Length: 286
Image 1 (cartoon, rainbow, N blue to C red):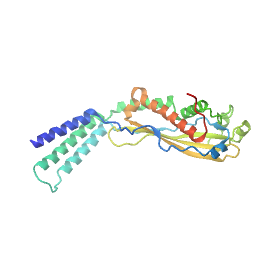
Image 2: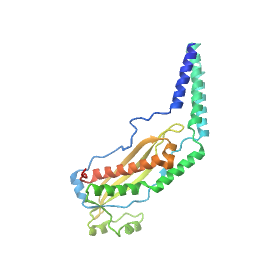
Image 3: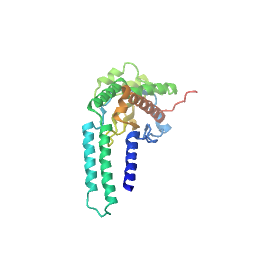
Image 4: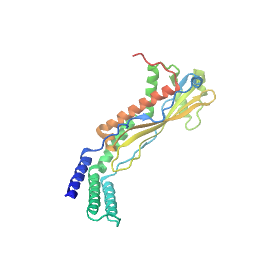
């Protein structure tokens, strides 16, 4: 009777796990994990009037794919085999009830793995649709131009007069320089003392273990201020953004609504942190 009661309890727990889904960790929120303190006023003063350089090419997105149903079934089978193998090892335990408990646990473990593969293994067609939706979102609203546009808007709203757009006519000149070391000295005659370069180095979903695990979005941006007169680097750093977590298909659902929203949140967060770190601003009146 005790074994049957334990069995019913374990089955009930199994149904709760697979029927109720996973709970989101309350600490799972979007932020820049290495948010820097504002630079010293004396260093900020050396920037003078700073031109915000236009966006560069955004790097390819690093996708992390969930397991398909075939892969998930393989994972489940391996887990079942390992559980059964452990349960039948000749160990020093009391026969009878203890043996029954261990074997029953192994069977439950195998059932859980099979259920997991059925519920959480993602069909190939669904993965490809999700990938297409995410790629379209990346094309519609790329991160680096979004950061720069939001930074310009935030600077205007917060009355940051030292951060200005690149003067007209100079963008073709810098594009023509290609991969060579940029020479910004021609900007000095237009009253530009330094340039601010923001370059997205990487974007990807974080690696996570499991059949279809929640994955966080990560992006790293390089932030550099260069003096126009002689090319001296006045400031160099990077910002590391991490988001709350969703599964691959949740990120892509409904025309990638969650991913689009996260990208906008990342753009705004990057822009505000850069403005706070590098420039003195006046908060808009409320």
